[in-house]
Image (cartoon, rainbow over all chains, first blue to last red; front, side, top):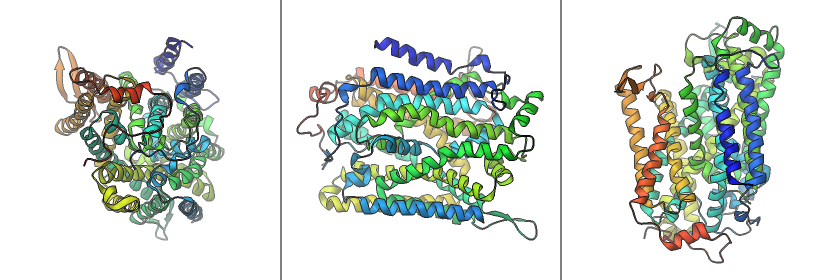
Length: 78
Length: 531
């Protein structure tokens, strides 16, 4: 996955956080109790989880992940 | 009284888990301070999450929403739900890899080794410890207030009395946290966190359903009335857009808090971070969304004479609309948030002192492993006692300010970490310049906020208010929070200071940037002690 695609995805989600179009609006009220500004950011939180899932699946630093258990502490300061 | 019984059961559970951890633990520093780096999967997520949740996530969020409206969620929660997992993904994982390779147990050990300098580590230790201490004290204060509030009852003469006074409540919190950390160390803190996180993750939904079922007409009816009345609390019209944007830099502080970075080092495998980063945003939502919603709705149900009293809104809603036993469980959920982070903060301070000061300056050579553990435990006891004594004076005003500065301060240290991990050319002088800049910035902000009146213009550039105090008395830099200028300045110092000085040694570059396989013999470039 090209790194620029990932960077674009992160930047897009970050920009979506600044929902100025909802600033002065209370309606519509979602599920009867959530004003639109609050409902939007609840959805944003779910979107953030999906973004992280996307990052884990596409750009997880496998070259650093040896997958080994820590059997003996590698305490170089002992 | 029922709620107190439930709280007592909760505290007994926490102490029981601490004792279990004590019996399972080994008598080594690695086990006491990092649980032998053995924390895996979902336990790692639950513990890391608890480490970062404080009383503010429940009490403060609802109190702030009571006064300022729904914008509190977008300002603090959804921004944290994005930025914190990103920092764990990019920074936390790499910190873990280097920690496992080279035996780092604190951020300072990492910085000392990476930058080939003991001085930078000492400066960062001093700054980090100074910013962390008020946080610890605030947790004890919050715990004392919660227990005092939960134990309130109406006396025969109609006056409000408490079964548990504030000093007793604060002392109880301090003792429980002390037992958990003193005996169980990191393993004790982690095991208790699992119990605590499940409790306070469930808190929000249970609170909303229970309170909603008992509010006359239901929550939807209250919200509709607010819509009809065009309540500003349902919008963000009173929240400056520049402030909303600039707050997104505050969550950078999370990975730089010592207790969070040390928690990252406890993972058994790097893959433990996968579940954590994916679950983090929705977990924040599970806590903050109900609390913010209840805070806003609560503004129509309970009325206070001063804005500061609004931190009680959730406790008052529970008292009025929830059965006593449920209020007790929910109170335990709030205590979980308080104690969970407090344990890690105290343990982190002890780890830092033991590793970065005592051991580093020859303590371990002289007193051995057992002596080191003794010092670690003794420091925990000392910090708890001092924090409790200060908490008795209830210096909230001062410490609320200190915590505010801590968020900006730690966030501004993030460029140093990013430089250390990703930029080969970063040097100790760049890191030192950035650290000193952050320290000077905090002092400057404190001085300006205490020297000028609310709303005053401090510096005007052409027709723009460059530096001024908001009506709330907070410094604003071109309309943004100071954290923007602090992060930018810190990054600039890091870059300029590094480019103007000699690059790190070839050996350090090779160790940190070119070696992906686990080396057979590992020794840091810098001596393990100052001697």
